[in-house]
Structure formats: C-alpha cells, structure tokens
Image (cartoon, rainbow, N blue to C red; front, side, top):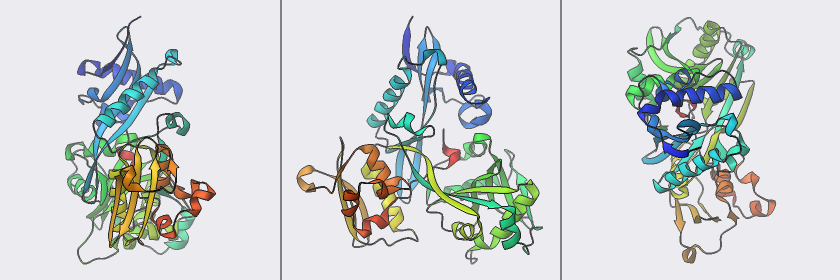
Length: 399
C-alpha cells in the first residue's frame, strides 16, 4: 500500500467534500459540507490547496483544512489561521494520520509567522497539539417571560426582518458595518453572503419603519452576530432599539427562547442584555494555539487599554514560556505593550508556564484563577484586572 502526504489540488475537489461528509456523518449526524460551509466548499470554490491530505493508494484517508485569515485589532493586523475538517477514516484509526497531518500543518504555521490559530472540537483531543479553550464570550439566555415583563409595553410593530438574498441591497451596508468593528476577521465583500450562511446560518436585515438599521445572523434560536448601524447624533441607539428588535424577533420567528453570543469587548448591547436576560454565562469561543505571544498579547492588551475598560492601571507581568522565552506585559505612562525579552535582560520571572498554560492565563475566561495559589499571590491587583485579554472569534469565521 502506498501512503502519501500531500496538499489538495483542484482535481481533489469532489473527493475532499465527499470525505468530509462521510466521516462527520458517521461520527456525528448527517453532514452536507457544501451547505454547511458554502464559502469553503461551495461549487467552484478554489480552496482545495488549504487541505492537508493523507492518501492510501490515491484515496483520501485523512484531512486537515487550514484557512489563512487576517485579524484586525485596532491598528494591528495579525496573520491567523482557522483550522477545521480534521478527520480520519474510521478504518484508519491508530495509524497516526491525524498526528502527522496536524504536526505538518503546525510546522507550516510557525514557518509562515502565524500569530495564532483556532479550531473547534473536543478539548483534550486538541490539547495534544497545544490548543487550549480560550477567547471569552458572553452568552445570554432570553426567555419570552423576560421580554414580557421588561418590554411588555414596547411597540414592536415597526420592526421587520428581511431574509438575505445574494443580491440584497443592504448586504453592502452590512459588510461595511462588520468591517468597521474594532476587532474582526477581515471578510472579503464577495464572500460575505456565504460566510453569513455558514454553519446553517440565516442572515436577516433589520428594518425600523422601513429604514435599514442593522443585521443579524440566526441559527435556530441562537443569534451569532447582531450589529446596528450607528446614527450621527443618536447615542446609545442600540440600547434604545433593543426592546423592539428582540420582542419582534421572538414574536415573528416564533421563538420561546433566544441565545445571544457577544465578545467581552462589545459594550453597546451587553449592558441592556445583562439587565434583560434570565441567564448569562462566560465561556470560551473556541480552542486557540498562540504561536506569537508578543504580537497576539500586545494587540489585545492595547485594545483593552483603549476600550471603555481603559485606561488600565499601571503594572508589569514577566513570566517564562517553555520553549519560547520570556514575555513581559507592561502598562506604563498610558501605553500598553507586550514584548519577548532576552534572558539576560528579563531578570527573574514570576513563574514558568507551558505555551498552553500561557494561552489560558492570558486569554481564557478563568485566566489567572487557574494558576496555583502560590503563583496567584505573585500577581498584582493591576495585572489581575488586565486579564483575560479580549481575544474572540465569531462563529461565522470558524472553519
């Protein structure tokens, strides 16, 4: 038997889709990857080169997809990778194919200067490859009784929703709205419609008295994205429109319960949702492996410094990351920074962590609370207030 590791080519298009459908349908539930991820697997999409393949006698038996993306954080642009479609044929378990493919992909990421990569899936399965649950996100649960009691008098009759079609005129404005966010994955305009439909999502334009005011992406009873168009001279319009929009959404879609996910840095909708929801929890938005701690931590520390939570209290955190060196986070004289420093310059670090532990410390919801009691005692109140840093990945940008 001839076993080969190779990158996908256009000739592999149908075989790649068929393999993903087969493996995930057998291990989970029926899958249709052309429908589930149209931007990646739709007809005619030239994305085969993103796939790391292992073949037995020319037939795909294992696969990992790595999609290059740009993450804009304030004025910084980070080179990142989304990882998905990690799959091995059931007859090939135990042959080391998944390990071989993942290690090959990770080696390429390090070589190409990727700041971090993200994937979804079972935690321990991917911890072997240095991925840790991180990227804190607020999840709000809103029941009809919450709406009835708090928004009972709100007039929702002026709010309407228009399901997106590829030529919907408001999609241009929705894309511009997304591109205006402080932190975001860069989305190409020509791919925006397909991205919103990923993961069986449906995009809707939100109209108030016939005027377009924003959009949302809905999967079942979960709102994965919801953005409102700012209006000059009208402050906190998101909070003002929230009662009518949520009431109309639940009434017109027939939803007895609604789940809404928002990043920690989203400060316009969160206050009102916090007052409305019956439950609110903070969870991880995915599994992340940080390759470049200086760039990633620096970008998100600066973002937090310039956010409504800032300015952050002054302080410094110096610790060692196994196999990476010494990382210094600092807030001083109004500036926030992260830098890998030479051992001679570093001095004595507060503690030493693995890269996975460092990722959890900086970016996981639990953050510093997962350290040992002795390590926690070494942290200043200022440093504790910085963490977790607001790393986040929208569901529609996952692979």
